[in-house]
Image: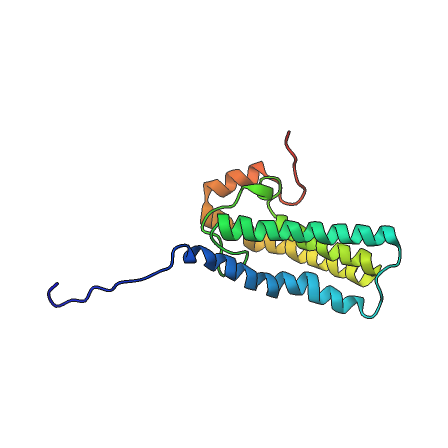
Length: 175
């Protein structure tokens, strides 16, 4: 090679696949961690968890189901399969239509809302219920006015077909 340097780039195998997972972890701690963790915790104040065993079990089931829904869709769906994150600044490179996204277009929001609902039940808190209503309205408008137009631009006809096939909020279970 006359007059030029050839740069050699070393990379560990599979490290590029870990970046979306790491970024999703950071996003999860900051955004859903605040929305479904910190704010409801602040809203319930000093009120203790309910002593009603049935309500405790229901609350734990809701929180666990919501966390499982969120974690599955954020990490398996977005980070691993879509090679991106739930954060608008680092979106997926591939339209995610598999897993829970095959039943409903916005399972992550449903998961986060279910966690918040579980806390409202656990602490018998109307403040958390009111907060949940606000979160749902904001999420709905965010999806309508930002997410859906952005996905339509990014994925074109593939997104339009997905939109026609899969509902936004209420899951459609196929036989």
